[in-house]
Image (cartoon, rainbow, N blue to C red):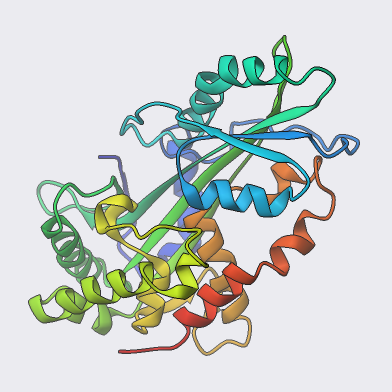
Length: 315
């Protein structure tokens, strides 16, 4: 569990930018990670290798590179140190020998490896009742998720701010060569503020049962499954067991970054945040290999369907 002390006032979000850099190596912020300067566009790769086992990310890469052969390899077990940048880089390192082996079977072909890691942090309580931002791993039991909701409610009441959570993502792409090649990386975050009354309801037995029901409904819905491309997942498959689309559908999301629920830009903010929290691969790392990547994401039917589903409030 990783935590960062936060100021107890209503202006937390503005101050967050000032206090987080002291922990950037723990939680994967890019303050001290030099990003490569833009490079000339590279011809679309013949092979794209995803370092991981997520069906969603593999399908995402197939959508982004429709003319490429997309393969995936397990990158091993992840640790819980919350350093998402290091975890992402480690995934690339783990699959590198397999990626090079695959390219040897395809002489004259070009290839890239892609990896991503996501971590959720919520307002919470440390021992002694100290309000802090808490790194949330995938829950082992369903009860952990309700306990997290209860903790978020109590912490926000103590701090006198609305409850919130943040999703940090780190992604990278690397050309597959015999020697080492640089990793084009991007770390990014979304800030999600929750409605305190809705969260308080979700922390009750009745409200939590409804959350679990909505969670299962969403991840088995045709909008999510996309003709069977994405198999259903459970609470234990999501960091903290907290899902943005489900919370939005239940009307519990009050703000995403600077867009409030009644803001005309809220839909676009939600769309971006869902992609960020479910896929976590930033277009910056893929753009050198596909200059039309931004337009493809903008027109991605799956993401549009899921966003519209989430905006059909049920609570």
